[in-house]
Amino acid sequence: MLTLSMNESAAAALHPLRPAAALPAAELHDQPQISLADQVTLLRLGMAVADVVCGLVRTSVPGAPIRCIVSANDTNGVFRFHRIRSGERWGVHDLDRYRSDMVVTVEDQPLRAGNVRERG
Image (cartoon, rainbow, N blue to C red; front, side):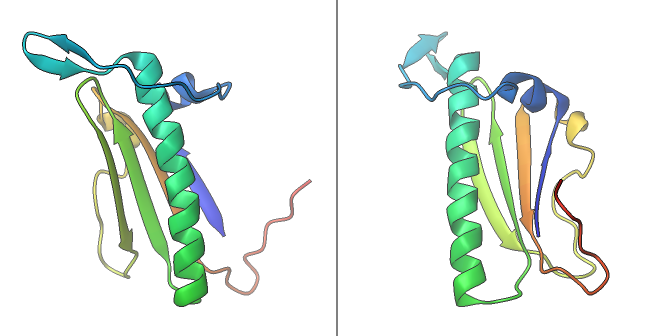
C-alpha cells in the first residue's frame, strides 16, 4: 500500500499540482538559489522517482517495505530511500518541524490481512 505524507509547505506548494518547468540557475550572495516554483518541480520529480523506486523494490524484493523522502529548499533538493525496519525511525516524523524545507515521504508497505482500504 502506497502512503504519501507531506509537510504543510509542501502541501500548499503542490496543490494543485502544476506542470513541471525547467530549472534556471540563480545565485544570491555567491550561493545557488532555487526559486519556490523550482523547488516544487524538484518535489514533483522526486515523487516520480519514488514511484519508480517503489516499483523496482516491489518487483525485486516482494513484500519489502520502503520509504522515500524527498525534500527541497532554496539551495538544494534531496532524495533518500531506505527499507523500513521494525524498531528503526528515520528522520522527524512530524514533517511540519522542517520549517525551511518542503518535505514529502512516500511509503510502500505490504497490505496486512484486515488492513485493506477501499477506494471510492
